[in-house]
Length: 226
Image (cartoon, rainbow, N blue to C red; front, side, top):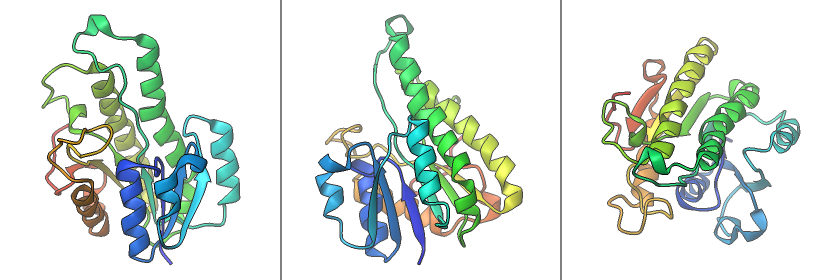
């Protein structure tokens, strides 16, 4: 059975990933900070195993790595992220919020990917995926929201470096923009449904080749400049 590991699986894109992969008979390892309140996740039908995981807690990560040490992971999907301190001007930045954003959006996914690399290496698919954002593109930057933008730019570079290091082992890394999606973060008036976004990203993951390693793609497979 193929297995996917998802962070931030209690809502939004992470929850939809869990639903769709479970419906296709994948084993889903779904993680979130508080499973007790993840009502929508707990009712997902299929082979879904839920674990408590704060992606910023190294001790929790290490405990889960140890518990899952014999579990191959075909797709490791680093989805958890935050968008706080949405300010227009650099002068209005809350630097503590910026630091927390970098910890969650950059340090956490890279750390987690590295710690679970043996699980991915032992699988058939050997894919790592990162939820990034078009807002991380330097070339397409229109200004504003420097906290979130800079975190995704940093994630893109770090994931790109990781991809190049792990490529020789056969791991393919995809850096994905899910679109402006109808989630708590994107808002109910966003143009892309969470269903369509996840269908698109799953299609990308299913068709990745070594030539796609470290790609930066929209959910519809359009490639974006860094």
